[in-house]
Image (tube, rainbow, N blue to C red; front, side):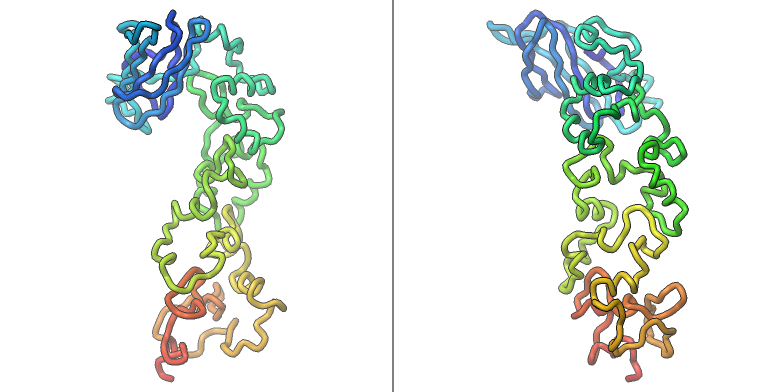
Length: 335
């Protein structure tokens, strides 16, 4: 069992102990969490908690009623994103994977924590982290790569190397094809920072590409679009939450991390022959009149689809940026 008065940057802890009772009840801050069966005098229970001080209590459940196992079975845990120095004076940092092998643990866990990356190591990890097994296999389909590819099985169970971008970033040890994307002109912020886990769950998920949530939810968590979502006219990819149809989530050589140059991207859906032949408004040329408003132009200062059309949503027909008589008056005040 973890000692009392410890601090952790995690929000989950395994409570392990030994008792002669057939079962134990676990409480968090006085509230029932779960009752677990004791096997060969040993028990373990996972407890999730929030930031701040958490009091975990363990009670034996004998046939005749409920009694505290011993006075040492109340644990005070301070949890915070980063335990500050002031807190460390009061709450010693605690990690589950300690260097000292405890007798209670070694009866089930034969591994010494060498960081071996064999299949056996993964199976050993799954004895405690079983909930990760199914999703993890959606990240790494074959079991020839194990937990120790990214984790060093030491007291901190930390990443083997820094999560910041470098040639040793653990993600790039497998995804070598992504390293070259750093040479592109426009890089999505999380990629530029080497923080792949902002979007991807390294232990796998039920969503494609091991994303932590569906694309529409994930993008909106950093790019709030409530106002745009409330407008009358919406671009179909935007309305469907398919941001990745137009934007590359990693990097491109196009503004706004678009998958193609903006005009080419628009024409890929809106003109079957890939041109704007017959379109009455001039495009791909420099504006010849003052419009009285700022306009989106290509990097060469030329008119393009986005000069007149908003790519996400508007309150005007046809996603037009302006409205007025014949829709032209919004730009051409002299006509």
